[in-house]
Length: 426
Image 1 (cartoon, rainbow, N blue to C red):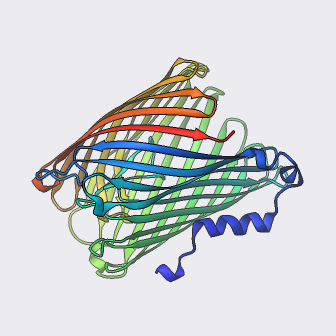
Image 2: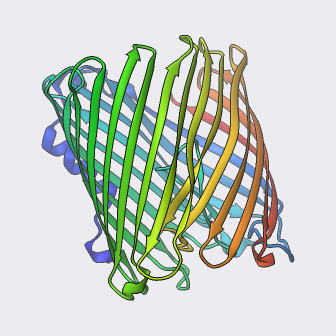
Image 3: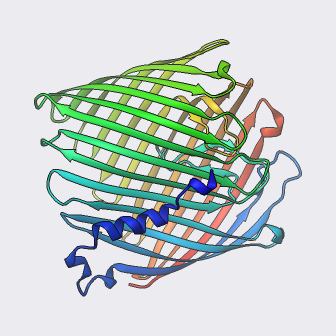
């Protein structure tokens, strides 16, 4: 599997070589768009392995040099932030390691009809709970490690879109997700996903989205599988501020061996989007899902996707959300598969002063697994970011997270406190 996987960063470089850098970007101000930086972070963690007993706490020092690049015009968009740092553990020095976090988003629009895009995210980390970069509302995977081990995740997504109307488009997207963990007891995996999509509006009020997805899932030891997704959505606009929609999602998971774990999922839903004002917008989508396995009992439940967002100029952003029904986790440390899942929370960001921003957040999650296990997870966090100078910022973050499981070994609680200072060459 590893030999067949291409680095996302290499793909980025190839794309830039193929499309070429526009002449205006090669002009004298090209290098001024690069902003090297160095960040120094000190973290206290009360439970580095997320264990219920015999907890290990530690101070972790991280020094991260990196570079940002931003350029956007009518034809080209290039946004990049790549950093690699060394992590020192004060007590558990055997855990010291190099970390990487890189994000790239490139767009090339040679005409008003065509858009080519490439996005790539690469992570090298030993965090027991891993952020889900494809998820909604800044969420994490449910899968959790009980011993720190270094892993690499790379997600590369090239796509092409042809627009044949103000809102009409044909698109084709590909995604490769690569996961490699140095712990031999944790399974490596790779996903290849291809998805064509049609967006078509019959008139200003009525439109449809038709989308298909094909998944090729590969694993080191457990059964590979093939997946099919089919989604259709019809939307009706009552006004420019209010629209309603109906959606149907059908999924098939076909495992190589054993075939008895094959299943299909039906998930119809309806929803409404409304802009109460320029500052306040809302979404409510509710439905029902039925997971029908080839053998064994079926699972069903309600689905929900709700969000209320308030933005006051550039000073305050408040978001209240709820999301759930089910999710599938096959490319993670535990590969938990089909999980009944609900999550709700709120986040707020407020600019106290011109250079001082306050961030607050909290969430609660519930996950039910096929192996007769149920977890409740609670989390709160708070942070302050202060721009001392144009090129110098500091940040302070505190957080608490707790898991209550009916399988005692999965219980944990964790306190974190982080101080970070970042200097950027402007």
